[in-house]
Amino acid sequence: MSNAALRALNPTTNEPFGPVFPEPDAAAIDAACAAAAAAFDTYRETAPEARAAFLEAIAAEIEAIGDILIETAMAETGLPLARLTGERGRTTGQLRLFAQVVRRGDWIGARIDPALPDRKPLPRADLRQRFIPLGPVVVFGASNFPLAFSTAGGDTAAALAAGCPVIVKGHPAHPNTGALVGGAIARAVAAAGLPAGVFALLTGQSHDLGGGLVRDPRVKAVGFTGSRAGGMALVRIAAERPEPIPVFAEMSSVNPVVLCPAALAARAETLGAAFVGSLTLGAGQFCTNPGLVFALAGPDLDRFTTAAAAALTTAQPHVMLTPGIFGAYEQGVDRLAGREGVEPLARGCVGDGVNQAVGALFAVEAETFLRDAVLGHEVFGSSSLIVRVTDAAQMKTLLESLEGQLTATLQMDADDADFARGLLPTLERKAGRILANGWPTGVEVSHAMVHGGPFPATSDPRGTSVGTRAIERFLRPVCYQDIPDDLLPAALKTGNPLDLARAVDGVLTS
Ligand code: NAP
Image (tube, rainbow, N blue to C red; front, side):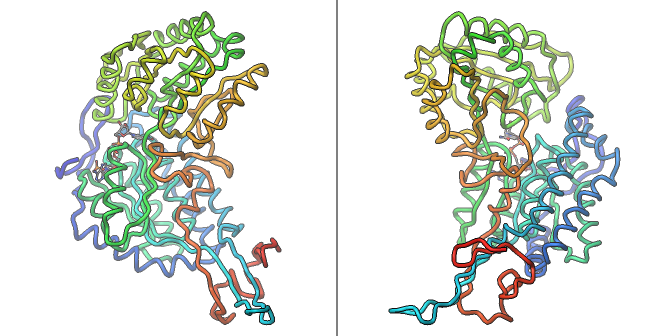
């Protein structure tokens, strides 16, 4: 944003507090990138057990910070105690989950195609493959998860698990929280006897800092969560480097919810109230917030709409993370309200504090939605649009018209199976996660989770930023041809000293 010195801001008062964070300059960027590059070869060859223990030590150091971490995050973000306490558990939990993955070793992807010296007409060489980490990774902490998707969040955990040194561009909305967590990681680095360059935190609020880190030739990949404009700016910078690098940017999603006819007929009122619960959770500041609802027009949808509107009118306002995010939300709601054919249905309760988001619900006919692309754009916060659909064919047309999404949800009963089956191929092409009878907010950190999807949900649909598969984004395969055994990495030596499950001639062996 600016080059002015950064201080934390309490979003409930708009008062700055705490120390000044001087903007890191070009020399600071250079030093962090040089240290990360120097640390890479040592860190990437840490044995699985040592690297796993390091990840667990970070988790323990974060817990050892104690209540001050939660109190600081509350003051900087306006998020409540229970939410941040849960988020701390998620942060340490995902570090420990990645430790399990590192120990298991299957991410190394060891494959051995033994030599076939007698093969005719040509012999085959001895071929061995493993994944190695890409190199230093720059992680842009997210504003809306100051713990679980920031300094020691999902991208950092995945990159460190892969063996990549990490430089975090700290989010200016929570500099003190970032500093506490950054200190915890630095202590774990030192205790493990690793080079200091394995981790760095540079907090600032100028685009020069983020841009400078992405431009640095020693940086080999980027993880980002934030706005579409910010993510795309970094994608462009990375693509224009003499050596382009991958950017895994998680940016924008409206998370369509389809109310299938039988489910709507059976439980319109319950669905209406539950939908508003998901919409207003955490002031709607989730990338998985349900911003679009599609259903066949008729009395059942009217019942849903009435119930949702009634629930929203009693929803309490909640302070948003920053004045900027609050301002963007207000603009987004005004933009929606001003589009032709958009009908206001309900607003939430108005508060008397600053930066307090008031929920917003609108409705529109499907023909209007199909004519106006703006109606499908994300409004970050608790705003949603109900689209009245005429028939199943139009439902498919509407879903086809959408951009890529993190999630797509089907509210369905047994009698909706054929209706839902007809939509699934479209939803698979559009979204990274398809849910039945749940709500998209709430993302489990697990092995099977996908938090990704086609553009603009992410800049690269081939991965996930939540769950253990996230490690794969920071790896690349290397093949060793006829390399003598004593020069091979441990993962590929004939004696299998790491006791890995390996594919030998395509057959998994342990
Ligand atoms: P943001 O403006 O995209 O900023 C995220 C990070 O990227 C910050 O560290 C920012 O640093 C950096 N950045 C942004 N543009 C940059 C550029 N052109 N060059 C270099 N660095 C850049 O996101 P935010 O501040 O968290 O929130 C703003 C909006 O983002 C929200 O209103 C919402 O629309 C969206 N958002 C989406 C999600 C999601 O999960 N989809 C999550 C959070 C926010 P500096 O500003 O310090 O340069």
